[in-house]
Image (cartoon, rainbow, N blue to C red; front, side, top):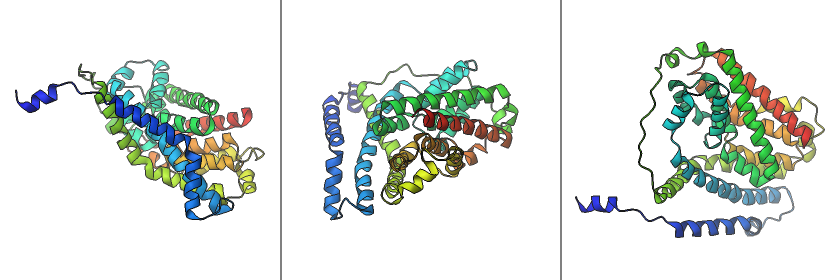
Amino acid sequence: MTTTTVIDALPRRTPWGWLVLAVILWIAAYANLTPFADAVLALTGIPHQGHLGEALHFFFYDMPKVLLLLTAIVFVMGIVHTFISPERTRAFLSGRRLGVGNVLAATLGIVTPFCSCSAVPLFIGFLSAGVPLGVTFSFLIAAPMVNEVALALLFGMFGWKIAGLYLVMGLTVAIVAGLIIGKLGMERHLEDWVRAIHTSNAAEFSVQRPSWAERIDAGVSHVGEIVGKVWPYILAGIALGAGIHGYVPEDFMAGIMGKDAPWWSVPAAVVIGVPMYANAAGIIPVVEALIGKGAALGTVLAFMMSVIALSLPEMIILRKVLKLPLIATFTGVVALGILVVGYVFNAVL
């Protein structure tokens, strides 16, 4: 046995000290977001009063806030993912009945921080593993719309009641939409190459369990992978939100999406959101700015859900897998569910 082999065989020490230090620094940074924004704005010499000052202060406050929340939740979910693999997930769902499988698939979507386009490859993997079509759609809807990133940011910005209601309503949309699509029996509208894929057998899994040091490493790696990909969307979303916060007149937003806006404001928000593309991390700062301008929460959340669950790029990718009747059914069912969510939020809040 070589020296390298001996070293590799030694148990790794868990970096608890570094982890505790990181948690302390994270808490300290999160507790000082407002002083940080005030200090950075003061360095620019621009007064807080005025459109530009309001916009810059919003950006300097929200940028570190969103990044801190995102980093923390993605790190924790990176550790959670060491207990779950896509192969185990596919094998777990492939034997489930319609109904039970929809609930499980939608729930699994919570712990997968994918945008709509990133969820499509796993969606194809589910189909190839023999997972029922309706069950796969429950996952495809829930993964971008009700994942841990969206919930963490909603909780940080609006509190647990809003985050909890969004969780319940989003899962309901994913489960019910998957059930409807499953009941319609639309497997014939899968592309031929997808239907030709043979159902795979249960994957073989390694019985070796990673150490906690390896799990923490996986969490750090998850942060680098996810945050490294989405930070441009975050900055773009916060910049757009800052512009709305500083420059868009309140009366204008209230007229389009306000609480006293006409009934058609919710479907209009959904229609406006579909051609756009962003993940939860990029669109939620825009939601915060719109609400700050007097927009109704349900109308804005309907806009957000259409952006992240019914984006045009997702439809283009799905066209490689699904025929047009199935895409149209998927879009119509999910859009109807989003409309219900918008009206419910506006009615109860």
